[in-house]
Length: 443
Image 1: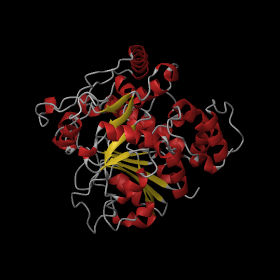
Image 2: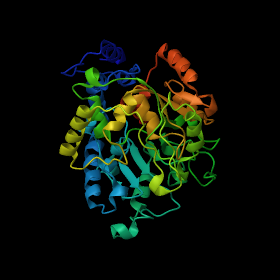
Image 3: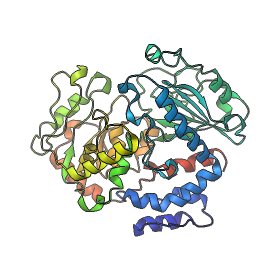
Image 4: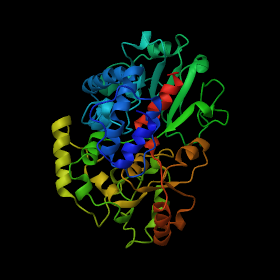
């Protein structure tokens, strides 16, 4: 089985192979994925290919350990619910190896070394003898700060020691893969530079602050950064179980109404921490009937009123929402948190043609990825950062330089243009990244 076989399966939109073949060529991970292909089809067509390469590379074993480790850390972490959140350990409704959706912990789950701002340093049992390569996930890691700077008193213990993680990253001559999460992205020691094989960089678009210096191994927004080893990645989904429950719902294709609303502009933070969203939203509110955008909160800098609500004319799909919430609560033992995502949000996205997704804390945001997974076209801010432009160039996004140009006529014309084209969205799913990781470690 190879790339062509996977692509044929995706085009046929059939169930895929129930029984795996004896061999799968590496290029099966590089199969093109047509825009708006149902997730259940993508999952079934890629299933055997992904399981084969996760098993042979050892990444699957890392995932098995890391998923259980993160679940344990969630139980041990006694911080406020607002901080830890239900999606902190959400790896979906099934075996994480079979999930193909990128999410907030998808790459941390593959790592030998994990450094986290809440949970400190963690090594897999295979970290010290993983002779082929070392995968390090640096989640909000900054060498200028201790771990747990905010939650020290809440948690009731001293900041975790990161020395063993830094030591392991420096040890030996194995190819090194780094997964980064933050707009100011560092790796711990300059000495690891020659081992660096791949940097998976998430949401690195904000170049307004001078984080780079000669003492840093890598500042991905510096002009001298080695872009050939940087692979920008999608920011991914939050509350992946919610999305899986809806995308794999038995009545998904029959009952969910797709792309009926012209523009969805709701349900996001508009406070001072999330860029200049308010002026852009104000341009869209010139068309209350056509766009129906939610009202801007009276005081967007007030924490209690910093979130846009749902659109005034909201479409309810009560039965599917009820099924989803029941499944999630039974499976994950937590209540859906309405201030993160509930079962209604994916349905709003699925029902929309375009989605308002301007810059937030940095250039990318969850809404951009969520819109694409839902089959909608996100309206994003035009970027001047080369890696981000390269990442987005094959995806069906609408880059906006001047938000005053976004009118109903503009969107209707853009819709006709985009609908006449074909798009490959393979970079929205995990097989695409597994392939780059395997290339970096020489498999």
